[in-house]
Figure 1 (tube, protein in one colour):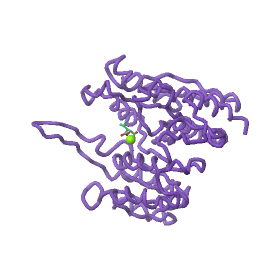
Figure 2: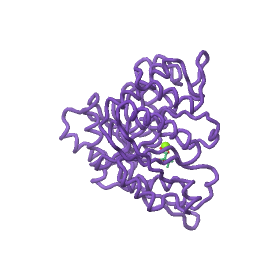
Figure 3: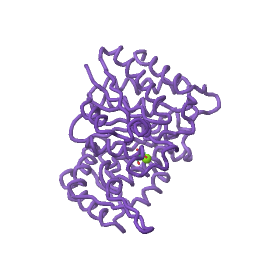
Figure 4: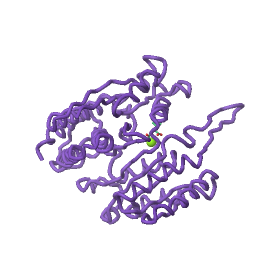
Amino acid sequence: MNKNIAVIRGDGIGPEIVAQALKVLDRVAACYGHSFRYIDVDMGGCALDKYGDPLPEHELEKCKNADSVLLGAVGGNQWNDVPADKRPEKGLLRLRAGMGVYSNNRPAKIWRQLADASPLKSEIVANGIDFLIVRELTGGIYFGTHKTENGTATDILQYSEAEIERIGRIGFETARKRNRRLCSVEKSNVLDSSRLWKAVMHRLSNEYPDVELTDMLVDNCAMQIVKNPAQFDVIVTENMFGDILSDEASMITGSIGMIPSSSLGAGTCGLYEPIHGSAPDIAGTDKANPIGTILSAAMMLRYSFDLNAEADAIERAVSAFLDNNYRTADIMRSGMTEVGCAQCGDLIAEYIGKG
Ligand code: IPM
Ligand code: MG
C-alpha cells in the first residue's frame, strides 16, 4: 500500500517523539511491504517563527491533500505573549477545523505492565481501566467568539443540534463496537448548550436501542473517573469537557505520555496525535516518552488505512518493550531499565516483525 503521510513535528519534544513514530512506521513498511511517503508540514511556534503564521494556508493544504496527518505537539513558553490568533495552539485548532475532524477518540486503558504506575489504589485498578473518551473537537467554546473589551473577557460556548447529533452518532457507533454502554457528559444543570446536548443524545438513543445511554454531570464525572473508572465504556462529551477529562483519565493509566488519539471527520483522512503537550521543560533532553505518538501512528494504520495487522504489530511491540522491563523516565520504577526517547523508538521498531 502506498500512502502519503503529512508529518507535523511541531515544537518542544515534538520532533523527538515524531522521529520515533517514523522509525516504527518505516519498520512496518519494510516488514509488510508498504510504502509511506512523509510530507513535512510546519505548524505551531516553528511556523510562526518561519512564516509569521502558526498554520499558513499552504501548510494546511498539504495536510488536506495527504492520506493522513501525524502530529507531535505544538507550543512553548517563548510564544506566550504573542497575540491570541497567532499562538501555536491556534494553528492546531485551525488544523482540526480545516480538516473537519470533529470526532476525537482518546482511549484510557491501563497496560497490565503499568498497573503500579497508576496513582489510584490497587483495588480500584484491579477492577480494570478501559474506556474511551469521544471528544467533540471542532465546536464549542474553543471556536466561539473570544474577546476582551474594557476589562471584560468573553468566550462564547455554542453548539448547534447538527453538531451535537454527528458527534452523538459517533459515540453510539463506538459504544456498539465495544461494550454498548455510552455515558453522555454535560453540565445540564447550568448550561443551555448542555441541555440541548442531553436532549439530542436522548433523541438519538431511540435509534440505538442496543446501547445503554446514561447521563452524567461533568463535575461528577471527574469524580467518578478516579472513584470507579471501571464503570465507564464510552464517554461522549463536548470539546472543553473532553479536553479536561482526557487529561485526568490519562493520568490514572500511569502517564499521559502513553496515550494516543485519533481525530476523524467525514472521510478517511485523519489527524493522529498524542494527547500530551510539547513539554518544553524536557525538550532536547531525550527524556520524552514517544509511546503516545507511536500508538497514534498505530491508530492511523487502523482507522485511516485499514491496516489492522500492522496496527496490532505496533501495539504488540509496545507491549514487548514493557514486558522486557524497559521504561522511559515518566514511567520509571526500581528494577526497570530506563531508556531515552530514541532508544525507546529503536527497541519498539526492532520488536516489530519479531513477535
Ligand atoms: C489537547 C491540547 C489542546 C486542546 C491545546 C494544545 C490547544 O490540550 O489536544 O488536549 O486543548 O485541545
Ligand atoms: Mg488537552
